[in-house]
Image (cartoon, rainbow, N blue to C red; front, side, top):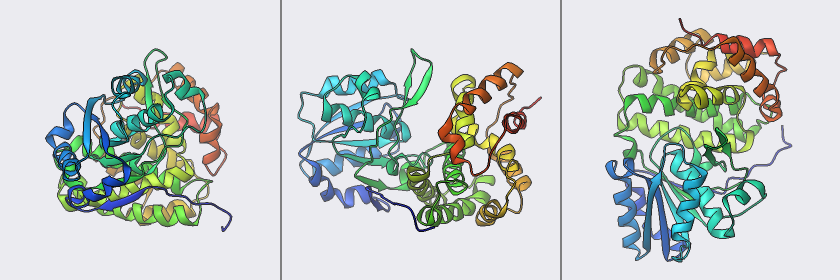
Length: 366
């Protein structure tokens, strides 16, 4: 139990209007900032306005790059660097959901290293310029994990760049999530839950990650009834944002497990949102466990009595469209996971090909 390491390099400031109230912290990172964000949402939810105000309060110059897509591409990351590399950028303010923060991590490396996009994927242990994260969704936990997922359309895949880049500071203000649709709120909430659950039911879990995961799972459990009732008030959104951030901390140490590995092809090939793809696999995934002590503890933490009850909750809240998978698709997806040694190692019990096939078959609808 006591043979582990724990490192969390991201400082966190939480609370309503925390960015503007604590704008002095931005002085630590330099005199010129690149704001990395998407085209629309940060302008609508107030996060971009607050970011600009915070920077102007401290007389920090800034440039805005607002071309980040829902799934950022390697080419867009390269474009952000190419257009701004001669402008004396000291640090990045990543404003948005996981996409903006993931993109910022890759962009920060390009600024620090001045390398090509291909080298970003091929070289190891690359450092970036400082990143300050302002998350505007509650799900990915990208503000407290080192992962950066980018789309590479020419290869038809989304890929983690393979670097370890943490934001140095994150501002958590749930007000920025208030204008999220109910559907997006649910999708991201289930993503946060999947990080907590897969980190908890994981061979790499330890005393610290379990302590964090248990608190995050309790917070998620307190949000189940409001989510079922579509009561997405600010108090619930604050709990979800904290659960998401905690989930990021957990998976930064444990990684994710079977549902993430099995869900990726559903997102890539079937256009199922990431959180939904994870969630619909959970009924089958949890049924695979033979030793149930920790699983029972997890269900207790979210105040759910059984896997069946949790399955019913997920079925009720997730925006699931009819899905069919051919035998060939299931075979190909299973083969892909069986070749993913990392995801298989994170699952605490040995799973067979038949187990994985059964999990996929639990999600099929007429």
